[in-house]
Image (cartoon, rainbow, N blue to C red; front, side):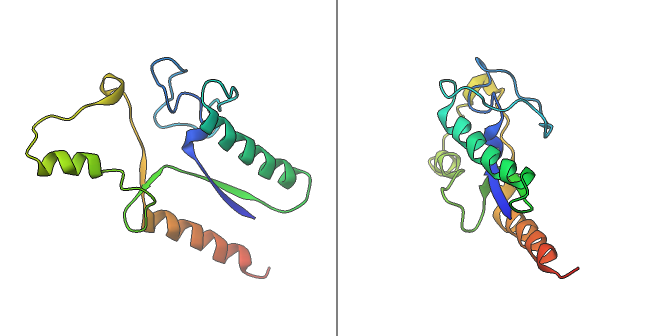
Length: 128
């Protein structure tokens, strides 16, 4: 089984000022969101990822789990850079930087992350 989650599973992803600061680059074993009150979306991602990997460890199937960054490019779910493009097209000279400019968001180009996923699936479908 190949599952795809999100880097939002890490504690500090949504609120770098009040939560634990997230390291850049983020190591795979960085603390995950364990309290729903601090970030329900991140907490739910961790719940789903944990369920998949527990079944893997119990021998139900072999699993690989990807944690994607924000995805941009063709077929992205939401136009993440539109707010910036709109400001540029309007001739505005300044951008608002969240978290005092300390937030860093990793992004992956949609065709690249899809290629990595498809390549892993192809390799796992080959007979031994």
